[in-house]
Image 1 (cartoon, rainbow, N blue to C red):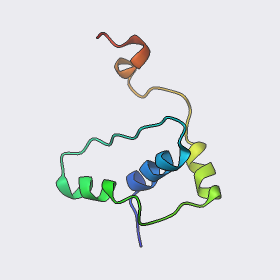
Image 2: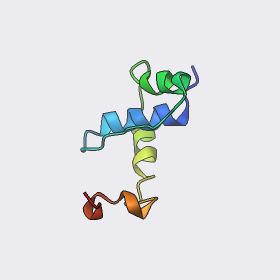
Image 3: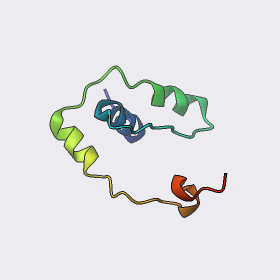
Image 4: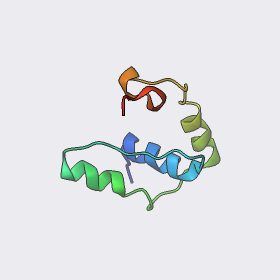
Length: 71
């Protein structure tokens, strides 16, 4: 079974339970369906460590900073 990277990262966020909420943006219904199919596979602790290692605590777009968002 092949999973897309987006589904793997969403599953990793689900496993982590550290307050991360993954909200993937997608206009394609097929991709949305794939992104929601995160409960039919497991991640090993080694895979979770790899996913956790991707976090750099950086924003990719400064206007999305929740601490400085102009509400």
